[in-house]
Structure formats: C-alpha cells, structure tokens
Length: 280
Image 1 (spheres, rainbow, N blue to C red):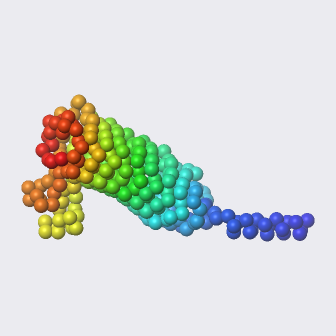
Image 2: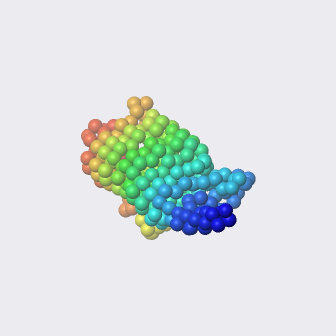
Image 3: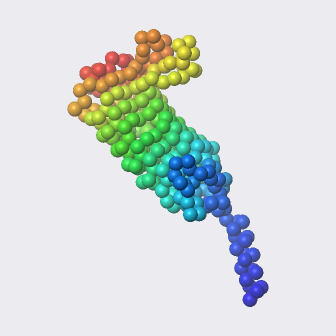
C-alpha cells in the first residue's frame, strides 16, 4: 500500500512538471488599489498557448495590468474563469499569435494600445459593459470585424490605424471620432455613422510630425482609406464639426478624408452639406 501511494505521488509530481500550469503559478499579481482584496495580473510567466485568466485563491482577479502579456508570442487564445473590470495599457500588445479573446461582460475599461500589433486577431466583440477605452487599442492589429459596445461615447485617437477593417458600424451614442482613427485602413470600404455623431477628427500632439510648431498637428480621421466608397449617415444629422487643419498648421495638417480617391460623388456631396470643406 505504501509503495503504491509513493508511486502515485511520484507520478503526479512528474505530470505536474510535464504539463505547464495556466493558473496561479503562471501569474504574478499586485493588489488592486480600488477593490479591497482584488488582484491584478502584473505579468504572465507561463508557456501555455491557451490561457485562462483565473481566480486567485479567495480573491477575484479584477484586472489585467499594464504590459502583462505584451510581446508574448506563444498565446493563441485567452478565456476567463470569472469577470475582470479592466485591461491595462499595452496588456496584450504585439501578441502576434493571439487569434481569440472573448471579453467578459464585467469589463468596463480597456487601456491604450491593449491589443495593438496583434496581427492575427481578426475579430472581437466589445461587451456593452465597456464604457471607456484608450487610444490606439487595436492599431496595427489584424482586425477585420468588430462589434462596438453601445455605451461607448467616443472612438479615440488612432483606434484602428493600419488595420485591415473592411467595414464598420459605429453604434448609436457615439458622438465623436478622433484624430487618425482609421488612418491607413486601406481595405475599409463602408462606414455607417450614428445619428448621435457630432464631430470627426481632432487635435493631437506629435513632436515628430510638427517640430517647428511645438508639436501640434491635426490628424485626418480617414486619411489614406483608399478603398472607402460610402459613408452612411443618418438623415437626422444636419451638421457636423470636421476638425481638419488649423490656419497656422497648413504645412503639417491633413484633411479628414485625404487620399480617399474612391469616395462616391454622392458621399462627397453629403459630407460637404454637413460642413466638410477639406479635400479627398
């Protein structure tokens, strides 16, 4: 009996070594400052391709921290045992083999650059619990399809820069599309804007773009969307603010639809009637 028990324990030990854990042993944690007893994943140290975001002992993991998975080339899929509230800045940036992540319905905030450079991430659903996200969340990713939370009010700067998006429906409730949001989306053919939209484009700070003017610049929201043909806008929208270039920034500013040669004549007229006076 003792010999059998010893062999069983020994076998379990070697199995534990042979099979990479994806639970507490593969994560480094820090305490959440706002949720008593809550933990945030500070770093993933495992080697598994399919990663499950776990509970931590008796405390719930409430967030994924800044850069926690950044640059990981092993993970392909991320799922959740429980809910989390936040995903930090660059949390999954440049995870270039990540193909699937199903965000939980408890999520409220996604940090800047969270999925930037995830070149194999093709589609994602942003749950309606999300009310805030940062800049460039999906920039330079492989995103072709996205469903956006209906509780988002703004599509911030550079959200989809250089992604292969083919079409996008901006949900009702969004009031603003920021600077360079869709810049370089050369596959983007059609955009549907909500009745709530108020402005397109915006002011950004970039020393590289405009050193002589103190770093100030205007980024075209749809610049270089060379396949874009149609923008559908609700009939209830009578006027919009199009933030293009400033008078003092003519050498560096760009128009919101610069280098969009395939926009239909009807769409051009519609945009002009709504207040757009920039170039195509």
